[in-house]
Length: 185
Length: 223
Image (cartoon, rainbow over all chains, first blue to last red; front, side, top):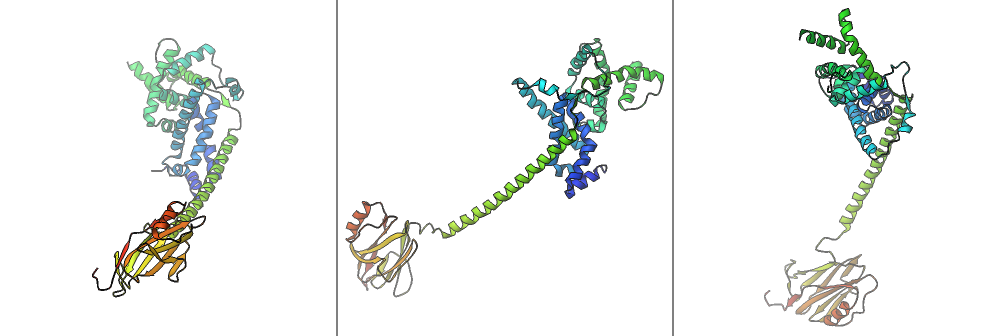
């Protein structure tokens, strides 16, 4: 059963009105695509690259996108796959010492009003997050960033209830880990 | 245990996006709300503004790439069609395997009009057909080592390009043989017997072949 919420996008993709279709697609899902990519990559600039790659790939696969049961679901899943590919490529590059952190730092902007996390707290948070199952960690990040569960579930390719339950259940352990009450999540 | 279950319910309601139903629930949720805020803040960097323009640029690049690919495919398709037509022309123009750079002979009986066989009677026609490697060519027919006909130079000889058809009347009994020679640069001077001519041909850079013999018997002798 195809979702009707994106019928305007489907129509545009099918009729060849690509400008309109992609404008709507970008406006409607650009932020969530970025959220999925950022949850995987944990790097704003790489996530931005991945978002562009995702839309590039969507253009290439627009016939599949138009035929997908859920355009949003297809897009989120594709975004995660693109981000994972980019993560792997970047990991190899990092191993080869080709990453220029200074260059990248210039392109990152911290949103105004974002709560500041103390360095020690941040280190503990990152350490504890790293102990989580990667899928759960990514889903938790997406949830914290405000992505709807429908998109999160599509991105990690799990049923909504399953991934929501896993994220929910990880919270006490994560909290305990950060507070130093537990070594492991 | 019931406390744990109670916390689970509170967390379920939190992650489901529902509002706290009581002050107690709000108090239980507070540390987790703070945790989620920390998770968000820890990864809060944003790329430089203008992501929409960057996405649009990427889409334009994809579009251009697709157009270029399509043009390349169309060009490639046209080239493939032309190549196929050229191949077809070459194949049609190419001689058959039997004709390829060689000569065949058929005996045409003057009595029955039928063709075939390697034995003929006086009065039959020997029909030589062949395709030479090169455009300069000559066909020489010998009876018992002596030249009896040559092409060009005979009215029953037809040459079209590298193809030649030469009809020779078996006017006397004997063993008929043919020497078929072609060359790109020029034909060697051939004026002798079959043996002499074979010697000349073998010493030159020309393409030459002698076909199997055809025995012509006197009339009245059974085949």
